[in-house]
Image (tube, rainbow, N blue to C red):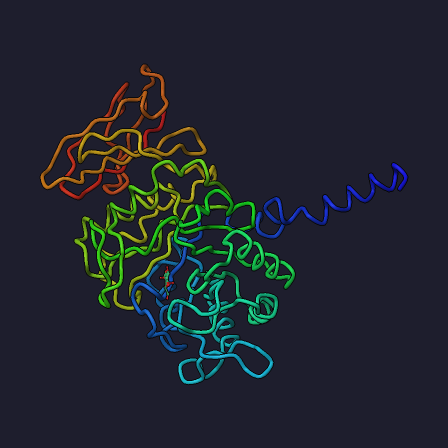
Length: 399
Ligand code: GLA
């Protein structure tokens, strides 16, 4: 081969192989800030139907969640029952009599986006048909239905390679021609933060499933192991901050806010921490019957603004002294969001130094409380506050 031909062949290879080695052009434009929405699993598990999903979408609008930035309505496991003679996946005809396309159309008519769930293996975690061997066929169908977001689970994958499996579904989605957010649900086993962006994932779970509890590694009702409490999941996020950014986020699992297993104060802490982690904010409670206190947590626009800050920097733990932790996140305008977290059983006073949040000591900054919605002080060098047990104080420091 002539040199010219070798160069052309090499260039062609680079272009053809590009999607395999870099974030694909489709995926890179999706989820510039952490996705916000609602997912059926934490509240409904397999009790999904078109009626209930429509009601949740309606409630997302009526409750002010849509105005606060929530966008995706995602049906998790159990919408699917079989494959037909052509291998097409079939939605449960009893629970979704109008079909998934009609439901997606309804969600879109409210100005919201529509998401669905499948699995990289032969079966989903609830034993429904998985995507293995049907990736391109399923992607075409999802695109035709108007799917905007696909959560792809990892049950029943036997010896499959995680990175290759997720690269495959991303390629299938891209080939189907509709921009679809890819939510990698691999539970952190194969360290998806190391390859999730490269294969065009827009978010990836970093841990096993969350449980509606403050603390602990807890067996599920059927005796299988285990769900994790909020602070246990939090501990597993330490050190992952450099892997997140616009279009590709660490996912410490969906929100349990409002599901009844924690106090309102603990839910406020859970929400604040997920916000500062730049985590996807996928509500998982019954939006139709939220108490005002729960709605006020989920729609706190000042806290959501920290999560959705366009710099896309994930907050990190900047100090830990026993049960007292300080978390901080840099914002686009140069200010910092700071959380004092008290994991202990009694009220404690806490302090952060400017050095810990990357400010020179002499800098004067206005500190604003994001739950009290008021400016607290103009201060130099440090800021301190008293924090209740299992509570947070969340502020911004603006020079
Ligand atoms: C796994 C996932 C959960 C949920 C269930 C559905 O456990 O991690 O988030 O999707 O499967 O079966």
